[in-house]
Image (tube, rainbow, N blue to C red; front, side, top):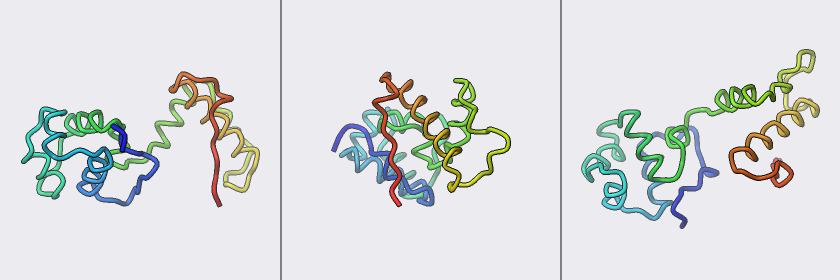
Length: 138
């Protein structure tokens, strides 16, 4: 597998110890290799993956960086608020338009949200927004 874990396969209900191990294994790393990449000890990583102890935020960020993912992806925390703040900062707050009812059934609201997400993704990836495709499987 690649050097970065695949964040597309994220289960938000997955406990942190299992999530940490899964991402490490998806990167094809042993605990010793992850310890070398992070400067942390193998027993510490084992303790976190077995649920014996929990890493501090700074160590979560170190682990996430070594795995090629964000700390939010590693912990499984909801990133929607961060995405909305990012969209607002880029002037893409039209998705919050008053008078448009909430719900996935509202095609206009959904298209505005998808367009905003495409712009954010394109800006972060350094590509043209027309090259970003978002699909929804039903």
